[in-house]
Amino acid sequence: MDWSIQEIARLAGTTSRTLRHYGEVGLLEPSRIGSNGYRYYDGLALARLQRVLMLRDLGLGIPAIAEVLDGQRDDAEALVGHLRWLEQEKERLDRQIASVETTIRKLKGGEQLMAEEMLNGFDHTHYKEEVEERWGEQSYRESNRWWSSMSKAEQAAWMQRQKQLAADWQAAATAGLDPAGDEAQALANRHADWLRGIRGVPPVSRAYLTGLGDMYVADERFAANYGGVEGASFVRDALRLYAERNL
Amino acid sequence: MDWSIQEIARLAGTTSRTLRHYGEVGLLEPSRIGSNGYRYYDGLALARLQRVLMLRDLGLGIPAIAEVLDGQRDDAEALVGHLRWLEQEKERLDRQIASVETTIRKLKGGEQLMAEEMLNGFDHTHYKEEVEERWGEQSYRESNRWWSSMSKAEQAAWMQRQKQLAADWQAAATAGLDPAGDEAQALANRHADWLRGIRGVPPVSRAYLTGLGDMYVADERFAANYGGVEGASFVRDALRLYAERNL
DNA sequence: CTAGAGGTTGACGTAGCGTCAAGGTCAAGC
DNA sequence: GCTTGACCTTGACGCTACGTCAACCTCTAG
Image (tube, rainbow over all chains, first blue to last red; front, top):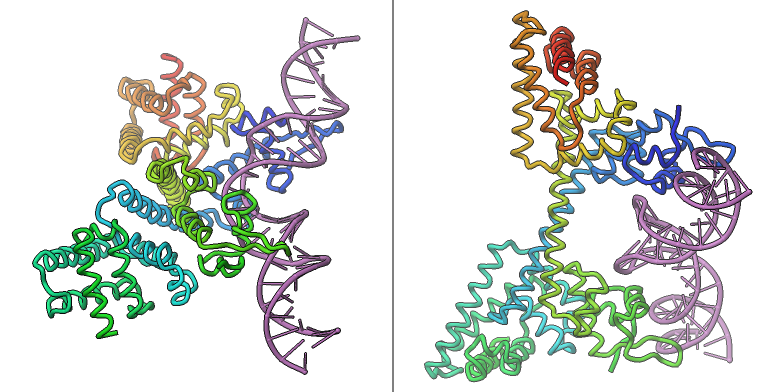
């Protein structure tokens, strides 16, 4: 009492190719092989096949399934291990979704520039040389990870500081303050502190701060944050002075 | 002003093998190839590489990345499409996690038997023949899908009906009612209705219901739901009579 | 006897590189 | 000038779980 490969495939809801594959990898051998080479499967094979397909539907890999079916591993135990893997995958997906959403907002809005873009823009596009000699290895991806690793709340807080800073800079520029004056220098100090919060290691050096100021002026996307080229020029001047005096 | 393959790999935080691969698939060619065959990359290549790695970190595939970088597709557009894919994947994972959890509870608890097991147990383990001739194709996997496709709430509701039904059967059996009586037959009617809710197509036939009743008695795991063999026997008798009279 | 359905093995394709393997090239030290 | 070690090249297999031809037998019904 047995079935051909097509028959058992239909019974179990899979394909003959899959059955041949299982035969190849030793997961499920035919119960009998005819003199003509045809594979035949009996009731035991069907039962085993059904367990295989069930575990497969739960997402287990072939080696894991084999372990369970050959009694080397407890069903529940294997599934619990598998569950942990699934949950990790889900977390990874969640993080990736968050990253993609952030990036989309950034691209679509053309709005407020965000941390990533600031860093990337500075790090690579504009100051490759300096980045190379200062952080050499992989600053871009590190900064990316830095941002991704923050919680939503932390990201929001960081953005908040950036907004406040930009607003204060704009106000100071509009008020016609002296870039070398105490108020502007205090702002520069806050700016440096804010930058230091970005990652642990890379230092806010004189060259870094000066280069950053130049970029704020040169790149209109950054300039927009400080009220255009005029405001950005004010920021640049104040930062340069601050850097020369303090770094 | 260019870098060797190792140098640029370190700069961007990837490996030389990856760069060769990108060269092979045409995603990123070296800016220059020395007479010795060495690959050299310049600033433009570095910039492109960084965009590649960023998109890769967001989970895009190489063809998608190529489209974006070659300007055939808008960044944001591509990412939105990708986002939908990610969300689908997440849903799939969620469903799988739920399935695995259910299965684990089932295995560990040895507790209340659940729908899946009822169906699987009936469909394949005990009544292969009948399943084969009645639904032939792939009833197991369909029933599995049926269950998985229900929301948590729906599953809970279905379970609730099952529990209520089991309790009523037990009460009737304990009360010493007549399996052929109106009360027992009404219960049998409810039981049939409940079964019909399981999937759309397969009909609750006379043979099916009779076979099911037999299994309730024969399989202690099912019998336990109806107060042991005695209770299950009562259910079986009532179902058989109901089936003969109405199906 | 013949057509058509079904069976067999063999081998390539998939995504994105990791990982040898075998063999040139380059810069530095003796 | 030679050796050594670091770095470069191309070529090819490996990984997951089969899908999909291709070329070629076998069985069954008319």
